[in-house]
Image (tube, rainbow over all chains, first blue to last red; front, side):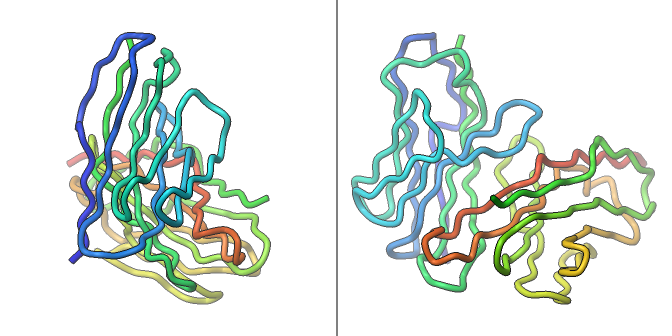
Length: 114
Length: 115
């Protein structure tokens, strides 16, 4: 069966510090991968998605970047964090097949920028 | 573009009450529709889905029917439990070939069930 991992689970970082959040998927090949942010009291905002190694699409302009160095690894980064980057970050995967629409989510990373 | 609108929350119910959370959507083409649930401090779990008009998705006593004529996908449960307290998200998938399975989410509805 497939599983998705995210780490760290919780992170507190000062403004201006760098960020690296990691997401890995097990039990599947060539998944589509997604990063979402959930700000307090709000819905989910799609930040990035990837359909293959090295292929990244950005949905919104922001202080963050994403990379996919391996088939089942998806990394969210920032060089300098802003207060507004605080939130709950969720990684998700989907089978890269036409007609299969549901996404499966990881446990999330709670990021607090002080 | 695509959009999903959920009823404003929070919703507070007593145990064994009937639940309805409204969801309407705007989309081009024929999207698939989903309900996800998020328990406190956790990621999202797929609760149920429907892929075409008149389909009924069901799971754990929850049901939702894909109504194309009213562009709706309302979530219902006949008798809620305290353990159903969570945030519920309605979502649709963009089925266009270049969409890469992106989901559009509603803003979420907080449900609290009291004993």
